[in-house]
Image 1 (cartoon, protein in one colour):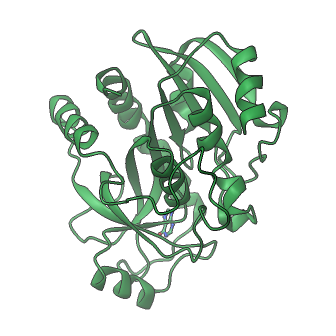
Image 2 (cartoon, rainbow, N blue to C red):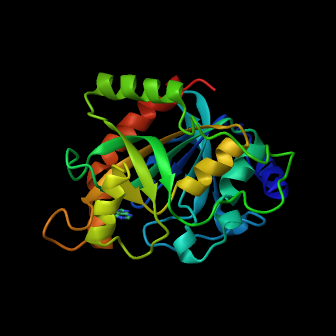
Length: 268
Ligand code: HPA
């Protein structure tokens, strides 16, 4: 990942302090940057190519209201068969390149009955049920400690800023706990009842490995879920990937508006 970081520093004059990682169907935001350098993942040494539908697979550098940022449009998921090291490669590369914090977006199923389809929810904390952790194995002390603290995995100050920005824009944005499942099958209704009992408000298949890797490196995280569907068993209907992508498309304008207002306000 240090090779990848060195390669990228040669490809672009942009020196991002913050990076945005875009989830399923939420790739539109990259087009908002000015002075763009677009690098397809396939051209970056060691970068795992993305395979999921709705993921463009490129790293975009540029400026937003004068702030230099990087956008990962498309991410690798464990359910695609990537190793935890591959899933966190992008975050670690951007960390090596000088990024101090990440804003993640993802698609999630809503478990909390007060959410409606299309809602944006700020992740306050997570429950890792993926059965793996990207820090398993010998610890690279140059990245971070063997046993990193996770008691503020999602930065309190960035969450406060995000809530203020959402309120100013008139976007309702409750907080919730995100449960990460391995996937790729959606959950059963019984699994959703279980997740509700253990304190989850949202369920998804991404973000948590990246947040663990970023926290390991001492980098700030903020994450926003788009509730693309109500979780299994809540409504009397099946969950489909098409529905997930459609809701993502429907909400992306609001999400872009939010990110544009938010990023210049985040202090690293
Ligand atoms: N479950 C898991 N992941 C998801 C869902 C879901 O219902 N919706 C979007 N990503």
